[in-house]
Image 1 (tube, helix red, strand yellow):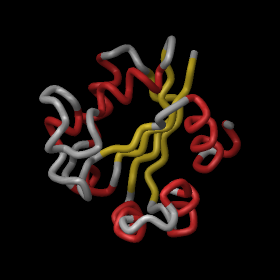
Image 2: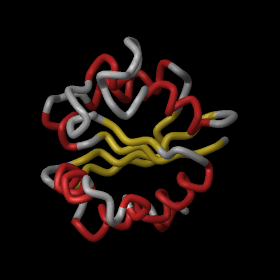
Image 3: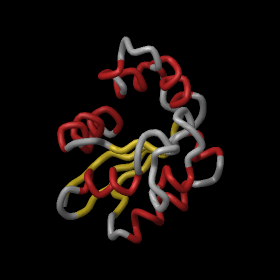
Length: 136
């Protein structure tokens, strides 16, 4: 089984969308193997978004991720789990996300885009180590 990291972001938690998002994964035969509801601190958010450091939007993205609790998950499935989840999530910009995807159905705008999912095996390993070091 392959694992990937998913963050159900504060906007989704605030809007009561956690069950909807998790049920979509479960209907695809993916399994949540770890979960933690917590407020992500600024240092951890910056580590998570390290590849975006120095870009004009980084402070806005960090502020959005740290403002209230997120549900951080490790999701497991057969094959390339991260690819399945990324397809389910949809485009980063909800205006470009296809209907039927999580962002296409539930997201409001770029700064309120509901969810993060690792974008490769390497990213999944790095991100799991950040949020669940004992499970990395």
